[in-house]
Image (cartoon, rainbow, N blue to C red; front, top):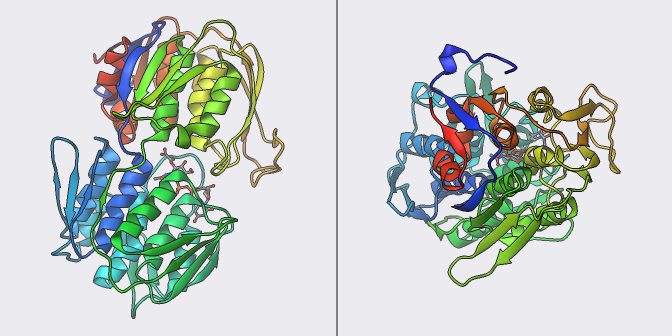
Length: 451
Ligand code: EPU
């Protein structure tokens, strides 16, 4: 054991007896990083919206709580269809909103919709994973350009719109997902035309555009990351089945590889996973796409033999997404040879490798850009490249989860390791993005228990 668990965390721990290949089937629902944004979009409509296949994760609960505070009635049925009725919207109290401070990054996306519907908005200090500075300068700069007045206070931000927000021509310094969503959610009801250049075009963003189009928006996605929005006077509610969660899919795929197992991820979709699937196959993993008319999915397995090392760079879509990096690094500890991973999206997304090293992994971090593309973090004090020498026999440890995706990777490492590990912080972090993971692990034959 490398660290001792504290008593304050004793009810937030999963005991993992490693070494059993994960085998079986799990199902993924709508993507966390679309569902939460589609919930924000419901604020823009003047009739109810229904979102299907909503995952049971705490990020959804947080956004639901914020919608309720603003008078939006929400009901969730047994099939996990979420109905949101914005008929009686009201301004919420600062103290009530502050209860959600620090729990998620989604509140910032409520700015534009609340300004359109209520004329004012209060946004608490944001949360989210500690994987870099995570500034919101693009968000605020764009909102000001639309005509919003922003007053920053120690507890949060007060925003107002003295008149109808006006369309803007805006170039993002970096194709940020959240900032692109911020501009989309604000532009759809602004007066006139908005043009975003250097926009992010992740599948979840395209799906959000589909939601907004269903509501009555006019949005054109041009070539070269340019998105044009023609503002309209009103939007109605929508009915939408979200894009499946490609991060969760990739996490289970990496778990199959690292534990020599076989996992069928029902609901996974090939189009969203193409970049990941190429890497998975290059490492030596096997997969089969099931296009059954009744839903389908992707089966991932370790075909036996040695895994191969790779050189990877994370990037914005269509590159390899940064949220696949951590589970893949765990799988790469089992590859034969040297792998190189250059993280170009976030400056501090290798913190979790310290625990992997304590478990026996051979991972060195570098400040240099060890990839073909020099990135924003090169020649600065950020350990954003990793060299992984494998294979390593991982051994059990006490692990403290630092953030959501790193947490799931710790879990994969514990499942692949010899012996019994304790993973602390599972409820606090993993439930933010992985639905029902205790039961999913049990159904895959993992030997896990709550003490
Ligand atoms: N950035 C700025 N200024 C801004 C906004 C972003 O400099 O105003 C920088 C960030 O510091 C970062 C880069 O732009 O270096 C990319 O950040 P982005 O805005 O794209 O990230 P995000 O919208 O905050 C979403 C997902 C993340 C995912 C990233 C990248 C949600 C809720 N979060 O974050 O998902 O890693 O896009 O794809 O959609 C997760 O699900 O665990 C997660 C962290």
